[in-house]
Image (tube, rainbow, N blue to C red; front, side):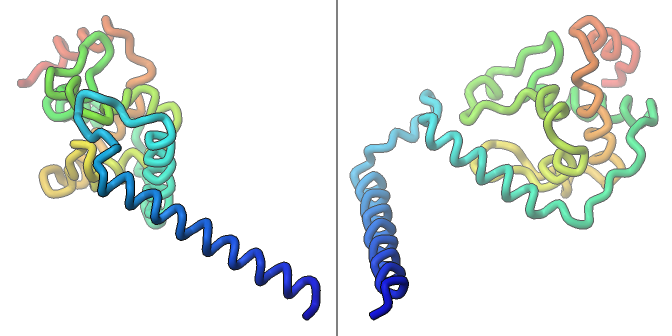
Length: 178
């Protein structure tokens, strides 16, 4: 047998054994209840990193065909502010506004959306707002908000990094409309 073929067979056998051990280890963790799922404890660092990576890859893989409209219209951002204040700030908070008790008690903790706006594209944010994220408490808003409202939320979230607590409070007074 050729050395390269022998190596490939050994590598394949090793991978199968390691995969089987991984599945066995996961089964033991699940069946014994070793992993604590209580909402008063954060995920362990490796679990959090794996879930965050899976989330990012999943959303990124589904962005095809989404193109953000122009989001620089101040009226669109103001409409997004109203929706954000009424539907998002309870969990995510806002500049100078902490999340409500429900948002503080969620695990994983809801993202700081000013940071999200710095790191993610408008299309990415739109997809998450429209589709939600399983097992995080993030609802899918596509059945409750129309397309323009979804983009209005994105337009406002894109502006969040610019807001100080004082500016957010000024918008709340100026725009009002509760």
